[in-house]
Image (cartoon, rainbow, N blue to C red; front, side, top):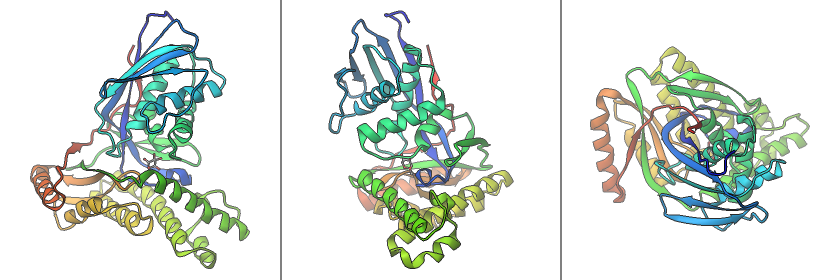
Length: 372
Ligand code: GLA
């Protein structure tokens, strides 16, 4: 393309209605892209390998050399550097470029600003350098960038949702077969409200990787006991119980949660199809208590917000959302009662923790889009 042309793309953050910590266990998830997004612009320069990345919201710029890409400890630039590294490893060619990005996804809120950055960069670089990669290829490349340059062994859900989002729809994504279907987002007289705890505990990344290993351990124990299984998706509750004696209490609980959560995702889709929002809400509470007690990825701020809703007739369900240890809760609230709900929650949270409680209404939106 012309050396002076600017290519711009955006990619959104995501919510996940239900199906938490199931993606890297080859299970089911039910996410949606949201309207909060990152916009990424790239211009090729005349250099063979040099370039810059500017984070507009931070007012910071870093320089890079495509021939010497290595992670920079704790830097936001690792997403873009890691993506370039994976693009080159995949056999595609990049030359020097300057890029910048900015957006309105709250950082650390569990809304996948990282996937939005990766997918907006992927969409812009694809066009700029004629890479012609499919969404599926970008899903894997962006995931590898996060694994190798950021160090979180995330699943596929976030990048999947950011790439494939569709206005007014959730997506039932089968992480084993890598297939999905759009599910209309019709919550009748309810809507989804996110409440941002504004905490993101340091544990999140290391505990995430530990959970992943614990699930893999269950699979390998069951396999050693002669069953043909390649992930927790192949493990039924009966099979898990048959192997109970070979498993520690901790890893048994982890696997039990994942098996139950996969079943809840499918039930949630049925509830949505039937318009049964009350039952859907009960599933959200079950997920929360599974994540709190069996998967152990919640924290006191999230637990406080969820349990505070339990006696509110206007709330059908609530749960922590995302990887855990902070971020947002997801609340299924009657439309007419949402103003009163928000003021009660904000007051209670401030009294308990001395922290403000920002909120966001969820509007399922389109996925990554090329703007020019
Ligand atoms: C993070 C990861 C996802 C997924 C969720 C938990 O958002 O990036 O891949 O595992 O946690 O469901």
